[in-house]
Image 1: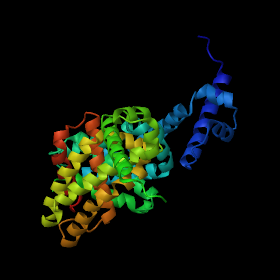
Image 2: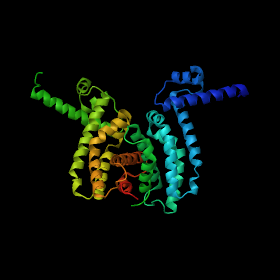
Image 3: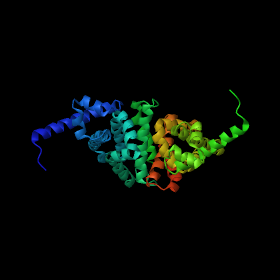
Image 4: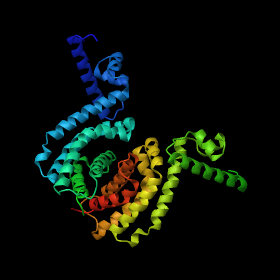
Length: 192
Length: 192
């Protein structure tokens, strides 16, 4: 394979960044844009767009992957391992919610395009933080041991997304979600 | 409007019953059948099928509506109002789960065709039982009053469907669901 000249490689990287930023912006505004609209917003031609992303689905996956990487970094920055499991859960909920709330519409599109399983795979990296926290809480007795860890992680996953749907339908105020979710999850994770 | 002769009306009703039964059977086996396949399974012609159900989506909605009516009747038969809120919750979970487990694949198709909101509307009638139970539990202090009733109903809704997804993915045994769900929901509905 011939090496790509540095200048062309830098152009390509700039284009990819521009495409991902434009696509994320459009999807996050709930617009469900066509490839042509994304190319226009990124200020590039359709041929260039398709050379990097052969389909809307591939592009959407890349947008979601980028968002998940940022979420992963934000959650790593919380140093959850230094807090008690209940405090760590409250922090984790607050940060995860602020990310999900910003991407709520992107999330709705993603459910439709990737299906529930595809989406869960995309979320796996972020939910490893939840998994580690629940493992630690179960080990030190802060969280219940009578239910499988995987199910408790699923409970967190299901309820944060249920909260996003409720906000979308105007049934819950976005600002109330961290408190409501933390209260619900702390109870779920503790044996009555 | 001319009155339909009784004989023709009886034929039409028999056809509708046959179509709904055949469609439910095919959808419940996860087959995502075409209209032609449904007509064949019901032993009627395509024209007759379309005269009753103009589209696959309309037919699927009718199948789901029928299943929800049966669920509603089953839940009414439980006489939940005669048990304490925690006992009533355990009964309600057991019966709802057995219905959902039987219709798991129908449910997966329904998510795709109706979307999450359309599906939730279809479930509303069954979830009125949950709503009434939570209202009673909040009033008599058995369930928490620090979170809105609507959110607690949503929690039940989200977790029973999360359990169905886990079973579908082989992460949870169907037989374990009633116990796991009841334990999780009782904690969620109780203040820690």
